[in-house]
Image 1 (cartoon, helix red, strand yellow):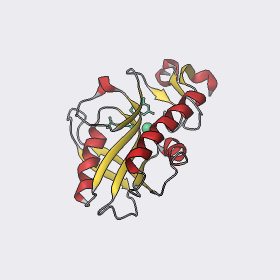
Image 2 (cartoon, helix red, strand yellow):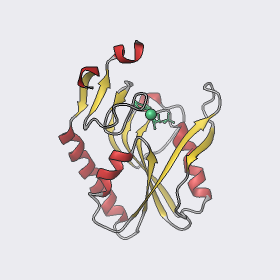
Image 3 (cartoon, helix red, strand yellow):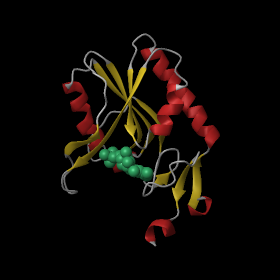
Image 4 (cartoon, protein in one colour):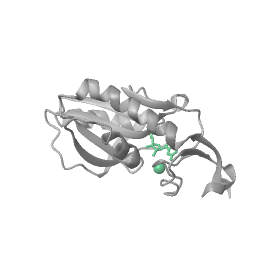
Length: 179
Ligand code: XMP
Ligand code: MG
């Protein structure tokens, strides 16, 4: 796997430090709210696992797998729910945890769905943010790192379902996806 990485963007240590920083921010806002931590599969599996272990207050965890469909020329689409959560979000403070905020289409479709189900509040925590790629405005409440418009893998992020288990975030060599 290592040979496929052009360069490392964030090391294990840098990630751990950032996760602690984000958890501290969340703690001060949610310490007495018993929030629902909503992990968006599959990419944010590892980020969520690390983040919740830094939260020292009551919370519950659930999972959703979503994407958006519609033609690629559209800036909006419809939410496609591949796996739904079990939790009832009615009256809950929900924190959506996502690996990367790219065009924003997926999250802009997910937000109204969580609100429609009666959530008291919905916040967004993203590990990575690619501001250049945004086509729909999405407000993230907690952001780990802003990155350039490069395809990144590791720490949950995949290329063709691979590399999710890398403990760091790296840029994939072009030769991997151009061959
Ligand atoms: P939006 O709707 O914001 O979707 O465009 C974000 C989703 O796009 C995927 N994505 C990436 N996945 N490396 C990845 O492994 C990347 O650099 C990358 N950029 C976008 C990802 O699935 C995310 O949830
Ligand atoms: Mg992916």
